[in-house]
Length: 411
Image 1 (cartoon, rainbow, N blue to C red):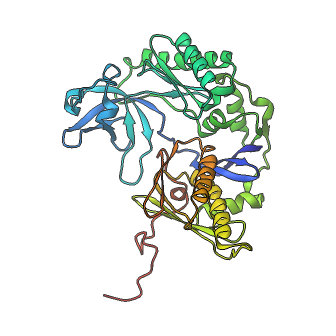
Image 2: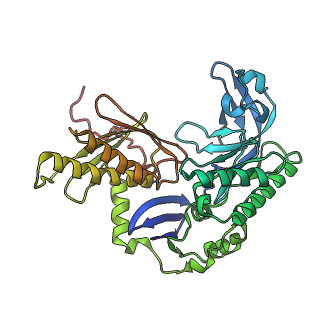
Image 3: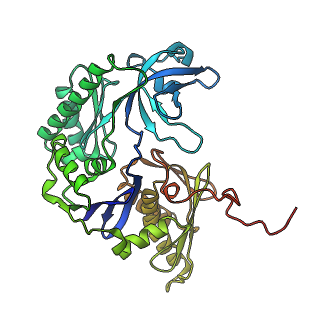
């Protein structure tokens, strides 16, 4: 069981999810700063780079966006065997409809795609595809067949869809209703795209609070607590866009503040530090670099009582659970390498990996356990969507340029 909180303090929105009394997601946004991810634009091709098989597109924001050749392929060529060059697909000055799939970060502009997706609670509307796809987290073969049949039954104009994990136990009427809602949104985009200047915003992804409710609200959500009357009223109005009702669990409390919750404050504190303690005295160290994130597990003060193997196993199991939470809480993306404490028994290794996989399934962002290297390192990948949490709180030190060290000897 858990709850969602939305706190507005000065120029910031703080949105988080608490599960089993621990903070598992936390987002910090400026009130006047609009996010780009999920937005759909009518853009103009500025440069076509044959050497990179990519193009830069002006969508009307402060920096041009990046479009890879794979994301530029039109619907009818998506599954063709022939390989296409970016110069065959796009020309300078051409106008195209694109969607932001990754926020700008550092010196890099946003990444975009022509493969439009409009997500709902139970399914994702995919007009570039004629297929019905099912979330890999749904494993019941009977339900998969039922969803496949339902998908092709409700599909309109050959516009495909993806059934999300939440659809497994949802009533078919809710799924049909949501497809209609998403189809109407896309129809409006199609209707307006030819009558607007270029570049121009065609569709804005709903607010972060809306997205959190859409993606995570279920029977285990005890309440949604909000301290802003404006946000509260907006959410009540937006309820008509959902195929389910949540207003009965929506609470307005102008005095609510996470600064009075010691557990949340401690969870945020450790989410911004390298060293994170484990319950029995062990700890993990998280190093975020440009190329990848390295996570090291240590026994610390925990010495156990039975044997070295038992001590190591218990520490690694605690670490697996905490690592899954930290990855989600910090919003870490890209390549992740975990150095668990060496284990001699194959059964222990399997137990730790199963535990890690179990808790990673709670993450609404796709995480893959790739492999274990010959050195015993566990390789993960997690889809990069937003900037990691640390970037919302820290800026690069002007003295050490981000090295984290102070020069003590002259050269």
